[in-house]
Length: 331
Image (cartoon, rainbow, N blue to C red; front, side):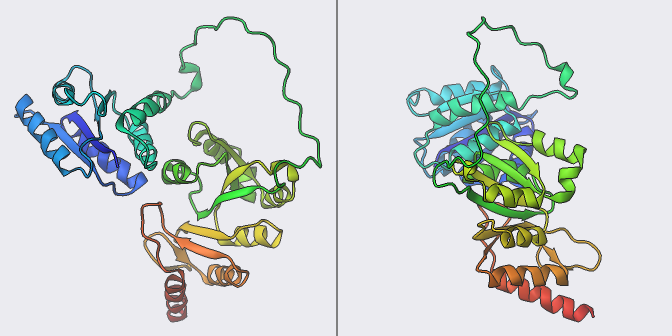
C-alpha cells in the first residue's frame, strides 16, 4: 500500500489526519509531519525520514503538503531526489484531496504517482462557494457542433439483464454524509446513489442538500419507497449499479416485500430516540426495529454491521439479542 506523509506548518497535518479518520476510519501507512515554531528544516526532514521508515512499502511514498515553497515542501523535494520514478508530491493539501487519496490506494495496483494524478482534480473540485453565484465565470470554450439531446429510453427496453445492480444497501439515519460519500462510494464504485425515503422525497431542502453532497462523478437521487420498487421492476435500469440508502429498516422491509432484490443490508447508524435502547455506539432499536430486522432475516436477508469498510463487522445476532434483552428490562 502507498505510504502517505501529510506535511504542514503547525498542527494542521495532525488535525486534518484526525478529521479524515473520523470519515474514512483509521489508516495504516499514513504519518503527519509538522513544522513547529521552534523547529527548523532539519527537524522536518528527520520526521519525514522516520515516517518513511515505518511504511510497509517505502518504495511508494506520496507527500501531501500544505504549501508550495514552504519548509515541508522543500524538505520533501530534497528527499524525493533519486525516487522521482516512484514517489510524488502534491501541494495545496485539503480534506477532499486526502480522502480521495485514501480511496485511490484501496486499489492494490495504485502507485504514488498514479494517485497524485488522480487526486488533483478532486482537490480542486472540493473548492465550492455558496451561494453558487460567487463562482467565477469560466471562459467560454470554442463553439462546438450542436448535439441533439439524448432521447428517453422507451418503456419495455431491456438493458443488460434488465435488473438493477445493488452494490450496497445501507441503513443510516443520516443518509448521505461524509462516511458514505467517500468511504463506501470508493468501495462500491456505484453509478448512482439512491436515497429511498418517503419523507425526504417530499422535503425540498433535505433533497437538495443530499443531491449536493454526492461525490464527483456520482449522481444522487431521492425517491419514495414505491418509486424504488418500480425501478427494481424496470428493465431499463439493467445497466445501473446503485448504492441504496434507507433511514430505517421498516422502509427496507417495504422495499423487499415489493420485490427489490436486497440480499445484504449494511447497518451503519440507527439514531437513538426516546423508547429505544442502545445496541452499540451507532445503533439504537425499539421493538418495532427488532421485529422488522427479524422479519428481514427470515426472508433471507443478511446483515453487515459496521460504519465504514475498514471496521471489523460486528455479529448481528449478538447485537439483536442485546437489544431484545435491554427492551425486556425496560418494561
